[in-house]
Length: 455
View 1 (cartoon, rainbow, N blue to C red):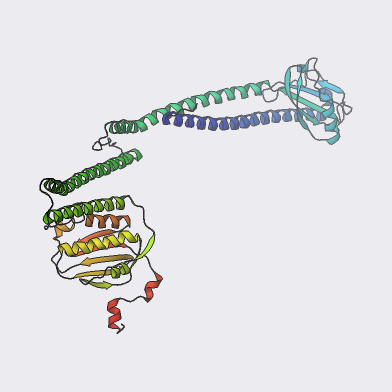
View 2: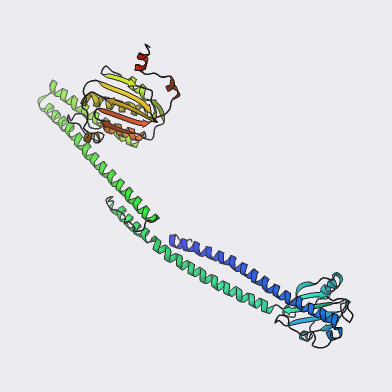
């Protein structure tokens, strides 16, 4: 089973990588060293064969004298065997003793071709490397024959074995060292993560979003992760606080009409109905229905998805025209939810009628990639410090009328559409990303039509 710990997985990966790399290096070393040693041995055999060939050419009588062929080549004892042109042995080194080099077939091929050849063979249990070279026609018993020079490969194999042993031991030591280094480094690197895990588990256990994760001192990936998670916890804390405030405000807002409604019903039960009492009951019911509707609309706006319908803000403004409204509209298209945008305009008009003065003006514009819907009146409007509070939940102007959710719904709709809502004195504006509509090019506003004398 593969270990699940990141430390052990990293250690295993590092160990496998080091072992694979060392195996490749070991194979390369073995090939290179083996090639070098075999090349050196082959050169020694060739040099010895050349010396025997020179001896056969210059002193053929000395060639067959005892001990003449017993000379080491490159520090290695060589075995020499001289054959005549018919493949018969005419001279041998004393080191051969009673043994014979099995090179008859190769010797005939060398004599016929005139080119030397290497081969690997064995005499008894001893492995030999043999070089067979032709002899020149220079007189003597070996004239036109061949010479076979052989040396044992035992020292070569022993040397290669030692090299392999050293490489394997070095590879194991390197792999162990690499694994230990990775373990130590990973433990040090993951120590902040372990602290973050323990802190996160405590937050999960307590459910307290006010707690924070320990911030590592290093400004690395772990430090940035901790900062990001702490920012997320801060956002969750603010959202929870906002939810609590919302529930508290909603409970407070619902308590007043419910208390009044309950009192009127009690009075009705004791004293009977009157016109004034029925009117108050109807007013309380309408207030409750309006507050419930606003709460539902706000909840839907915050949970709704991004809209994808093309909506003309100027058409919405024309559809809402009334006797107390002046229009100053130019084509402005957005990608949005028509019903939600109609509710935004209704809320802005109701806000202007309830808190403003004089005539109301509705404007639509599209400029610099932004579409704006503005509702303004002739009153003084909000003070600068109030403009930032006006779109909060349950915030009311000095008159105290309304549910305090109308502008909050406008803000939620604007944010869902990727825009914003803001106030400047008596001007309340919805600003959204504009969508270019080809039909806009032929559209004219009411004022432009009047200036051109059109009906």
